[in-house]
Image (cartoon, rainbow, N blue to C red; front, side):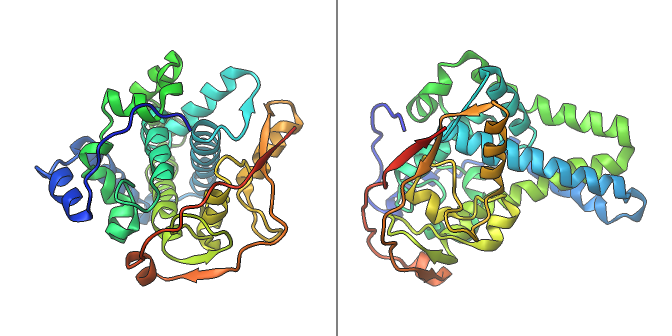
Amino acid sequence: MATTTANEYPASTSELDETQGAPGYIAWGVLLWLGAMHVGALLAFYPGYFSWSAVAVCLILHWLTGGVGICMTYHRLLTHRSFATRPKALEYLLTIIGCCASEGGAVGWVADHRRHHAHSDTEEDAHTPRRGFGWAHMFWFMTPDVTSRHTPAYLAKWAPDLERDKVHVFLDKNHLLFPLLLFVGLYLVGGMSWLVWGGFLRTILVLHATWLVNSATHVWGYRTHETRDDSTNLWWVAIVTYGEGWHNNHHAFQTSARHGVRWWEVDMTYMAIRGLSWIGLVHSIRMPKMPRKEAPVATRTIGAALAAGPLHRGDEPELVAAS
């Protein structure tokens, strides 16, 4: 992870709340867009907009925008560089698919996530559940702290590689264009049923699924590795996020393309990466080098996460490259 000069952060949570929360900044653009998506998703309850083809489109686009666009591209490719694409243009195409998930542009997304890993579950973490489950799930980007707003300095610090890429900068600045074009295409091809199910409802399902990685997998579940944060492995989040729910594994091996380490920890995103490597579109896949003896498994509860004490500071385990 590349960073530039360090910021100055408040010394305590109370100071953070008082200084960074003032004067009650609200990201109105984000709030209005997400509000519209939630209202649009409610139209799925209207029987006139139901069709089996619309359900199929919803499921397919959930995998494409959520699984391929966010989990594989925004997260494992762009944030952690756990693999590389061949040709480079494929990276840009996958990024466009990620834009269609309505989680913002890749540059800002990557910057936020890299900061999260640098300061996981500390006062500098933008979305730790220690500030509340709802905050970690979605409120953190609706009323962002001063230090997590997407200023040029913030992006240059946390995503300098993407900031130097003119194509990624263009896609980031015009990210809203792609979901809008997708919505128009869905309406022209399948009418209101495709727009409601494949557009609005699918967007909400993808958003809340990926947000659960920030909230639920730092609260509930089991811990296989002694990491310096509250990350857990949570099977039901792994199902709806195509393997991202094996979050404690990910925090232990942050640049690994594989998050599901045990045989029963199914990781569909890693399967997709492997599949692309078989046809020559992906290479330089990074894998975890597992220790001979794993740390004891421990469970987490929401009370334990919110009232956790000092964190254990550990180093990231070694990784090895796989062809």
